[in-house]
Image (tube, rainbow, N blue to C red; front, top):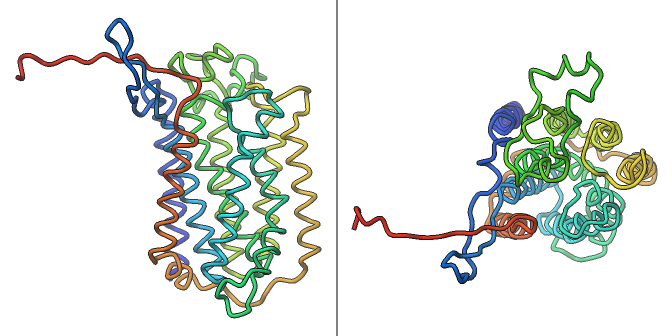
Length: 350
């Protein structure tokens, strides 16, 4: 019964969030959430910094993904502090990598790439687990089983990356090709759900001048596919089929990363076959090697009630709140837009 409620709630939330985001976020109003004045100019106006919906939606995605990883690993009987150590160490590498890899591949200083961060995380995750197993964390000598932990991380990533695509819709990045540049049959299929972005500060406008033009809904397709893969992988996970859950989530997400690049119109680095596509293929091959190296699924079925119990305590809740704030500040302080503000008194209300 608990599993049915959990899976139904996860599916319903994913569907409703997608419908709201695809309908609302392409509009100009949903890029800047707030502006903070910093210093006053000679003309009496204030120069300020923008806080973006990209940051809010990205922080939401990290929060959901981390919470899901904590619940699933807790359900598999992994000690709470070991789970927290794995998640914190993984994020400590992946969050900076989202900027560093973009600088290397796209030659841009003020952008982020989830694909680069995931590639780094995929390579490091098994060895982070090995490292955590060398540290006494109050687990009474019971280490972190690699395959359940890796499967939980892959599922959490699938949902986090899927939900995070709405941040791209808000900012106008990771956009698809214009329908006019697609095969007529493809254009007809996607015309009813094509995205039209408005606002000159969105990336699709200043980078490609495609604002006001219908484009392929690549972000929405990614969201739908990743969350679907996450749901099926979660079902496998709850049946203790950890290897299958890990490989399904990994192959679908990284396989679609390779395919979806052909439908995107934003700059993805030099060459027809981008560095991110190479990373996706390498990640899939590496995943199969990892499953073979850490051979054998534990037979014990996960207990969701145990997973929720491990989450519902002060330490993980406070860490999740801190994570949301850190991610919001890191990704939500706009580097490519600015604000000019003026203030006045409403005399009729004095």
